[in-house]
Image 1 (cartoon, rainbow over the protein chains, first blue to last red):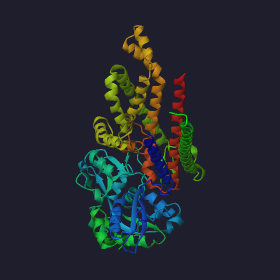
Image 2: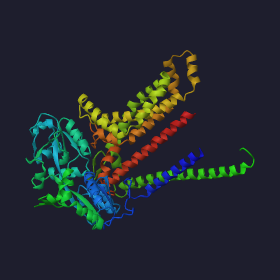
Image 3: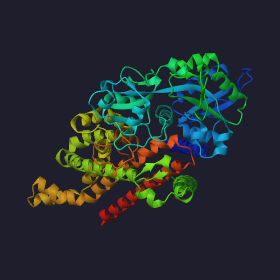
Image 4: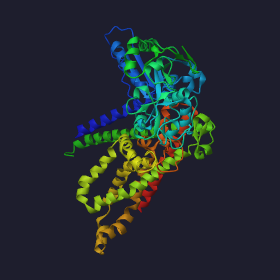
Length: 309
Length: 299
């Protein structure tokens, strides 16, 4: 009995102490950092250290997968990837809590503090293209830019006005802070839109897809990797939303996935980012997970949105 | 205390035990206090900076109905309204159900109720909110869509999901209150020739009312603070809804949707913290109300 009690006491104490230790961490995201770097390794790899990346949930699976591969190759390195959203990634990399901040948008578009945004070095690792999708029943295959603008600003409220069935349009939008929405508004609509009364807003692509699939008359937008038969991807100005059209620059609704470092990265982080740009990763993991390799793009785009060949 | 020689040793041992126990519990309490104070401090500094640093006017924030961060419009009324509307509706739906369920478990089938029904209700409390949200999105929303006008998603869906979530909270508290009721109250009532219904209506319910209200308030507090499940089914349009089947937002849903996408220190981010502060203040109000009810109950 006594033994049990003291055991329980030590256990609670240990728990409390570990909780306290958690409280001291600055990483705030509340993830458990398993630091494997302190283990003595017999490997003679030159690289060692730990990389912490946080930010965009759209980019997270890719960074995780590539990170795992990189760790297999360099046993002295530990890479930890957290989500949190583009805003979190930029905040944390700028504040020095993480080495890499993942973002769906250019830092200058998101950050108020211009000086802090300038300190960040951009590494564009992949491209994500976004297609307007509708419920398969609405019977529309192509939408022009003007039609899309009219739909998303509430001027057109019935599908029959754009050549579809006589059915009310239900907009499944993203929250105003979303990177996907920013990309869609900038390159597909060319204008910011107000949140319409009665429109639906969801942040997760899975939920958007589910709602567009099930709700009659729904329109939304999804990254190409989410497209399948359940939703109808409509052409934009007569151009199909396909990888080839994005690569050749015909289809304009796409954005870079950025991995930001504060200043020039240290040797380990640099090696990791370089590894990201190798053909092995660009043609392997990037494609496999539904992104478009940044290295393949035949067109380039700067922060202002100017496209160059 | 088997023999006299043992006493000093035992005494010393007990003193050490006492000392360790005292020290340990003090540390725990201090730890809790530090956590609470730092959370309140953090949320408050962030929340107040919307008004102090970014100069958003407090009245615009509380009563403005336009939420458009891109145009520097930070009216949070749609979210405040949405939060109150959904949690009140949820309490309205859940309270009668819970009280009746509690009555059934304690008064009508006490044995079976305690052995089977109560654990089931407690199980309901253990289901993660994301599961409620997903079930709401997969079953409730299509049902509402085909039965009522609108897209299924909206205030009604949010309130129904929340009402199911707070059902176990209210039921458990009501059940506890009912089973703690002294037997003689009931027996006296029966002895006077009252029927079971008259006893329940005239004696039991009035007596346990404060406790039941405590349960309702706690349930509302949970509904008010619930984020994930509501966010999945309410639609999240930043407008004051004109119908129960129209997309709307709550304080929690707008915070979870936007917090991760905004950069710390930006006005929008600070405005979200201000909403978190409102949530926190509301929680304090709920706790305060519960305290008041408990005090009334004690008389």
